[in-house]
Picture 1 (cartoon, rainbow, N blue to C red):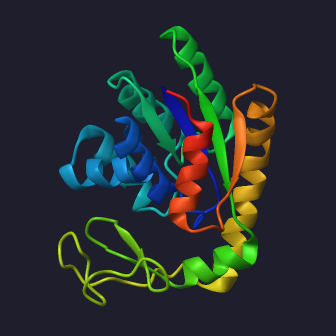
Picture 2: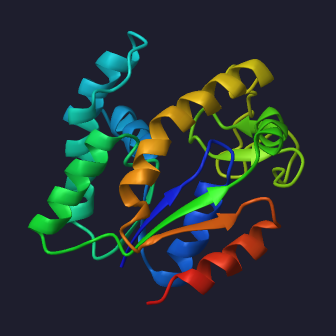
Length: 211
């Protein structure tokens, strides 16, 4: 089974992906996590990606596509979180899945209004070491200001200000609307209300997903 989760930054994709991973035994694949790990381990992919990131440039589609398809190839079922991000990536994913006789079983968008996204992200704190994120309002760390995983001091990202968040949301909509249109008539596209309690959202997701 293969699931694609869509949703704006702060919609809760990562949280729900982890819950679905545990429930169904699927592998959670997020480009950001894979890139950070590759850079940390100084793999060939990591070195290539770091070269772009150090210059403040986006990692090219070709590199992201190659990285993600290789990861998908080695799994029996995945939850995709943050990939595909544009039509080029979506088309590459479709072609690859056909090639290996697989498909996306569910494409689910977690819907959250802009004002709630701003409230959530402005309260977010992130571990600079492992990338794990927390929220001061509804998902605080066990010890205030410190990461549960490695004890590192949490930071407030510079792009988690209201002005920057609004800009990021606009970019997300510009890139994601074509992806939604791409999948909407496929018979596997669904939406859930992401403003509910996260466990209620999880129950809604489970009501959609049939093993």
